[in-house]
Amino acid sequence: MSTWANLGLQDSSSPLMEQLIFFHDHALLILVMITVLVGYLMFMLFFNKYINRFLLHGQLIEMIWTILPAIILLFIAFPSLRLLYLLDEINEPSVTLKSIGHQWYWSYEYSDFNNIEFDSYMIPTNELSNDGFRLLDVDNRIVLPMNSQIRILVTAADVIHSWTIPTLGVKVDGTPGRLNQTNFFMNRPGLFYGQCSEICGANHSFMPIVIESVPVNYFIKWISKNLNS
Amino acid sequence: MTNTPATTSAGPVLRGLHNATIKRNLAVALGLTAIITVAYKVLVNDPKKAAYAEFYQKYDANKSFERMRANGRFQSC
Image (cartoon, rainbow over all chains, first blue to last red; front, top):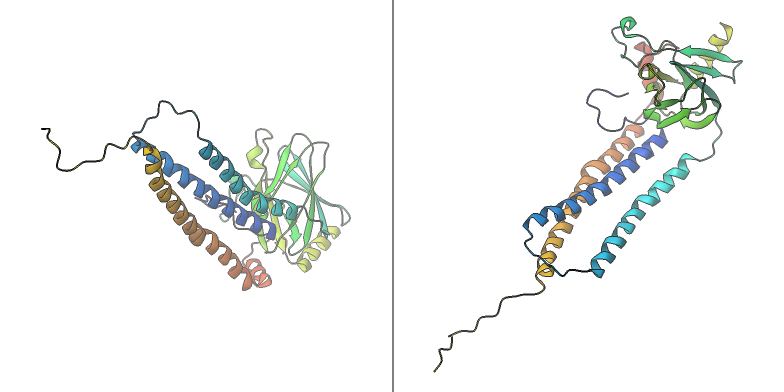
């Protein structure tokens, strides 16, 4: 989750998010390079006293500042396309979770297991325990198995919402009348937090998401407990 | 009898001024860019990749889970 003074991306809990972080670092390296080069050239303009009233064209420099950026863009494009296709790879999810956005809470369904359903509301600040996270904790968390492919289907009941977990690199819009699907894989146990990412009214900032990532056997125990209750 | 100067000096340079200056500027610009780019790669990119590799090499997910569970972090178990 984000802690105070967090500037960059959250640490990843998914192999795909790891790749996204590395690609971000690579793209930022290229941006730093361009900024330093252009910044220095602009700075040197302060010290240039030459004037050419009859300057009409400069074919060589036009060629250079066309071809060089094209080459730089190739260095961004190839890793980007590699990652784009990696994100779209077909895999066989073992669990499917359905997430429905409402104003202003999420409801979840585990249809694989005799329709386990529940709503997930933010815990109001005045009811928060001393070790709770303000505006992030919820009453009923999503429980999912770690080291398993998870499929999530996101939709909404009223207006557009967006289901997000930054540490897993997942952001999926929930649109009324439409099902959006994505897959993710958690390679660490723990609690993963996210917040609604599409403006949806007065309490848009107050409908967070919490995933409990647990080993498969604990997930099965939790499912059995909920089936019986 | 005309006075001839003791030495002849070269006339002022009137052309190619920009190109002459820009060569030095370009060299400095490219050098600075290369140094900062390599420094960023060595100080930011590579250590981050190494940190992730090192973390996952020694990582025991179940041990981590048991530690969190003993601490009471989970609702479900």
